[in-house]
Image (tube, rainbow, N blue to C red):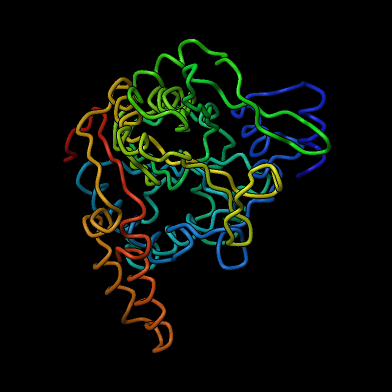
Length: 354
């Protein structure tokens, strides 16, 4: 447990888990994401699909084909971090589609202090815009909004069903440690939603609710005039989430699952599974249509992973080809990322281009 978060809880008294998670991830002075402690990849705390070069190449392949068909030449990456994904995406376009790579406007959005650090080099650096939040963006008249494992890091409220009804999990400082306590829910609107969603679950069940998810989607839609939105993450339905007795909170550090979220708060990744029904409703209310949800393997197949694979394969050494084959299996195999993650996509005012 970091002393900063302990002091925060001691100062404010018991705080909701939502406040705790928000501070642990986004506090400007000691948050995991906001202070540059987030590390992804082999030497980091966790892997994502974006850690695999072939993933970025596939998204670039799918994007350029859609851009040529519809004219959406702006690509907005949410949670772009240090720009590793963007660098691979743009390098692929420069290598495979040199006649189109210069048409692409790339926008990276991330709150971390090292955002876009790897984009300083490259002939495409001048066509990249970097921002800390959606609110900073100008209107995206025609483009693709893309986010990989962004929603699961939105802070969540946690509730437990007891014989007295739903109670909210708060965090307090006691005897040198952070501990959970159950209290009466603080937000009537939130508990009404939770009660409706998880009606009939047995006592002892813990669930999460992300109150910022719908406002986040609305903030995107307000900037996004026309195009597509694609969000990949851990998704599950309301019904299945209600069957997860202990909830879905996960913490990772050094590729190890941290079972106690309070031991290394502010120093580890902290996520929850995203409610697919919640997201689909939020997208619809924000004006998006044509919503689809599919496992990652199918999404990548539709976006051209095989095309990207073969276009790059012939340019590689024997050893590099072996690694590329391993990457392909990692991204699409059911035992790896292919089934663990899903993609939700939708359109907004999209009309075919010339």
